[in-house]
Amino acid sequence: MERNSMMGCSLEPDPHVLEAETSEGLIRGHAYSITKVQMVDIVTPNTSGKIPLLRLRNPWGNDAEWNGPWSDQSPEWRYIPDHVKEQIGLNFDVDGEFWMSFKDFLTHFDRVELCNLSPDSLSEDQVSRGKKKWEMSVFEGEWTPGVTAGGCRNYLETFWHNPQYVITLEDPDEDDDEGKCTVIIALMQKNRRSRRNMGMDCLTIGFAVYHLSDRDLMNKPQRLNFFKYNASVARSPAFINLREVSCRFKLPPGHYLIVPSTFDPNEEGEFLIRVFSEGRSHMEENDEQVGMGSVDDRVSNYDENEYGDRENVTPSLPQPTYPDPQKSAMEKLFMEVAGADMEVDWMELKQILDHSMKDDLCKVSANGATQLGAPSGGGGGGGGGGGENDGGLLGLLCGALCKDNAIGQAFGANNDPGGGEGVVMVAPSSSVMDYGGFSKDVCRSMVAMLDVDQSGKLGFEEFKTLLNDIAKWKAVFKLYDQDGSGKLGAFELRQALNSAGYQLNNRILNALAHRYGSRDGKIAFDDFIMCAVKIKTMIDIFKERDVDGTNMATFSMEEWVEKTVYS
Image (cartoon, rainbow, N blue to C red; front, side, top):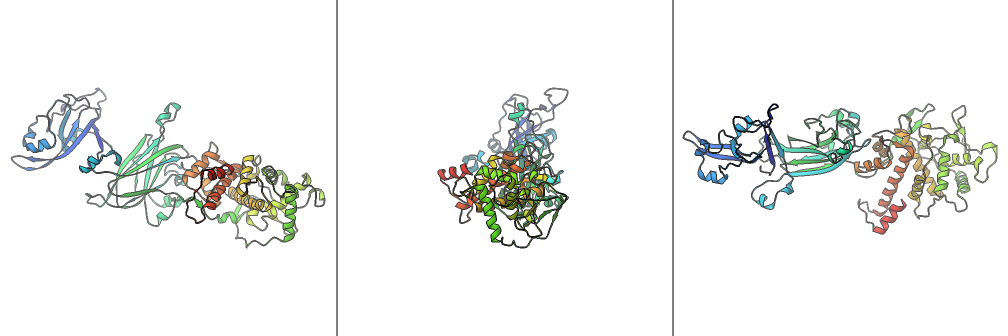
């Protein structure tokens, strides 16, 4: 009542009689409104003090009223001073409104429902008259299959992928003897009722609350191990398929993690979470800061033996400088493909990449590899970049650029132990290569990513940079493509992008999953490369303008359209 909450109450209905009336005049199954609560001064011949009373209203608004103690014209009112009667607005009209004691209320009513209104529902006049406001925090989010739809705590391996929110309760309630804070958490799913005619019923939803230490606050978001070794301190009463699930808690001041979820993983939906508190509180999403991170050591040290088993190897030494003759040979071979302008457009790039990553170029010999460094047929060098020289050219470009590099091994290239110039051993990798080649959109985006002058072409140095990026992304993909299907499984996108050095929050990951994911939430190799290209391009565009590292950048409309259209 102090915070203008709306309250209703009811008696359990009689299953055999519709709208049955009790001997005390109450109607079963009716939704009575609680319109006032008051501590009333009472003076009797034997005692004096205060008694808690409630004013209720029957929705019929007729003579169906409570006829017990403190009802209209009951003798108990003789012991209430007239000025108190006037103060509480007492009247005895036949209007369905009546008073009763709190003790009788507990005895006769079975259910109470409260609707807590947001702070902006109170007018300035109500606040000036002593009405108190809730402290409220509101966040919107979504459960996206394969990204943020991790299911309940029963599914420990995916539970941590759910959206996470941290709330800090600063001060205990004013009148709380235990020094605790009142918290009301309400989780509502959005846009389900409006789509019921499309067969979209409410999801089974709930939430869990965990206490956070100061050390835990450093982790954004909390990972698997946190939930493995920490129990919840509060939770929703049950996971249920209602539009909204809410519960009231009393918690000591401190930091708490709220994890809303569906019961089963990979259920798609939108939600609104609200947290009310009597004292001061602060709430924020517990998610990663968008930006660049470090590349996973497992990517740099990734290796694959001839049976396809992954293992960690000792980090390689600093990369040696390529001999000038080798660089010259690479430039010469690149020029054969690029032509006189020494640049490749997206079509030439697609031709090079598709050929370099097809298994039919990796005709495996008895020892599981084939020598692609020398021109086929034993012919000499030179040539016009035609079919018989493609293998040697592509092997040299894609292998020598990653020479002595563990990433190069993941990319499918091994160095010739004899040190022969231009000799590259290329091992097959069916888990990644079984695809129809890069799409034209991917190739165009690759060109745009490194094409600073927007000429639509890449020079030799830009091409080398691109191959190294592709090698890194391919190594990341193979690291998480555990079943060799050529697709990233559900919930692996965040970890894969983190391993590639990109830190993204849930909103961006959800957008990427909607944009590049399949219906079952998986990401194919071609789509993963496109995803990585887009992320790198947009971050580079931003950092180019944010030279001081302020995490803020300003673009004019013309500049923004130019950058985004060509990316």
